[in-house]
Length: 93
Image (cartoon, rainbow, N blue to C red; front, side):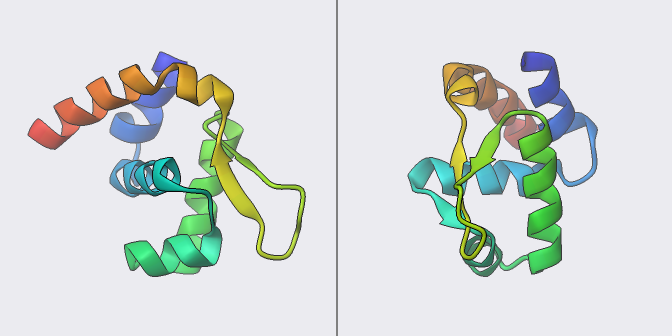
């Protein structure tokens, strides 16, 4: 999981936006529209990042199609310390 976190948040384009999405989801579950509005990012950009985060088991959607909420996965939560360590290095960089 730690390698995936480095890839998602440091080694690939869009890492900064993915960090912001994860930080918003740590506060509470949100749907893509809420995230786009809160982060002032285009809806399509948010959905792209959510798909990447979902592919790497960082977020999971609710079962509802309309207004689908996104949650951080239990697996990600177990690696939250690694996320904080990685992102603090990026923030300091």
